[in-house]
Length: 397
Image (spheres, helix red, strand yellow):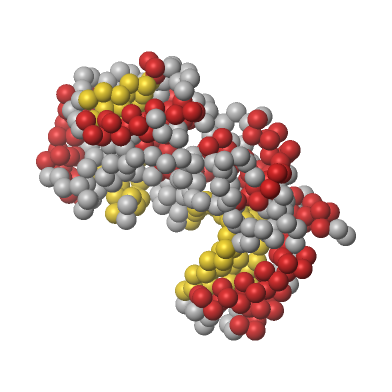
């Protein structure tokens, strides 16, 4: 049987096991987004991950349109190996040419935990010889005209190898660079949230049903940027490439049909974004990120009245409108000094007095801040941001 028929029979025609990586605490948020994007498979959640079984083209859709997920990998092997002989024997049984092209050759990343095979470099070296030899012998070269997109860097695939308690799990990366990398550079202020973290807060907080987004303390403007790109239907397939596009099973015609016939998640057409900060430097950063950087081509037809960037102290903002959302990432942590109890006490007062009509998504860094805030959230998600344990409060009117 030729390789193309084997790929169809063993890769595209049957379901496979996948793992989606997301921000800890936001597993259910990511699962809800996947469901809205059409995934019908049951999903099992664990710390920072979702496991499910689906066909690979269904997962292409998640990669192309999800804003909360940071990576999706395809499981291709699971076996015990207490020595290198066993590892090599099982690796030789895997049809690597079904998963990887000859060029670009896959990267191999190894992690080991509580296993007799613990030397990650030695494991990677042995697997590299087996994988590269198989691809050289049976693989197919990359077709640059068919697989590459103009002016977008090639995203080599990665083979993730995880050893734990002598069990080896092999996974093929479908994303390439993590999905929080949206495909263009931007300027950043201190301690920004990642794009996927911001999108998770927005989705969990109710952005799909909000007519106004208040983004005070905007900093680098991540909440505003995510919302603007979302509203402009600038899904990731439009702004970047993915490793899956350089795999043997990738079919450009099927991909193009899928992305052009998938609507994605719509925000309300009347949604306005109000980005403000007390810092002129921060506002200059936001102006650059939304109007001059790589994001600008996707926002060039964005209505000017739908995006307002202005200087203001959050505590001077007027009472919020109904059907609105407030997203806040206040200063905290080692890189930004602040009197946390005082700041969060004032934040709580402001929210109670002027944002009682709004859905609120607020990062809270620890018990001291929670006590000072003096607000009762409808939902509270414990997560990690910038290496710091935090909670995210969701407060509904």
